[in-house]
Image (cartoon, rainbow, N blue to C red; front, side, top):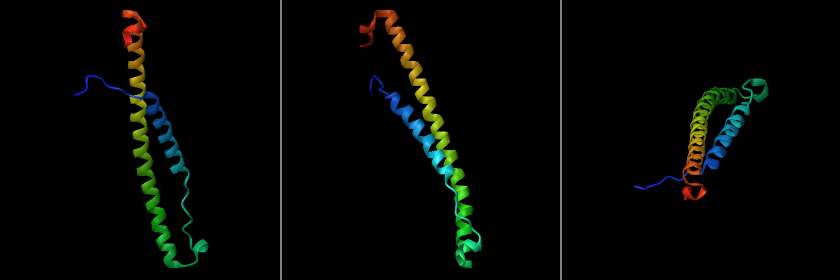
Length: 101
């Protein structure tokens, strides 16, 4: 087992931002209309209606899961940032900047 942990906090923060962008992008997608006037063929209308209904459910499921992941990653980044700051302050208090190494 390793005797230390290394975390790239900026990568966690960037990941949280990018997950938020994914949620925004998925939420902005609008399904095609499922009415016969825009398609013409009744069989295609039925298939399209099924897709639109499924897409709404899947979009909700996806955005919920990604939003949860975003919150977890963001919380982890904040916790590591607070820990890193506290350790830096402690090192400065105890032995100066050289004590960090």
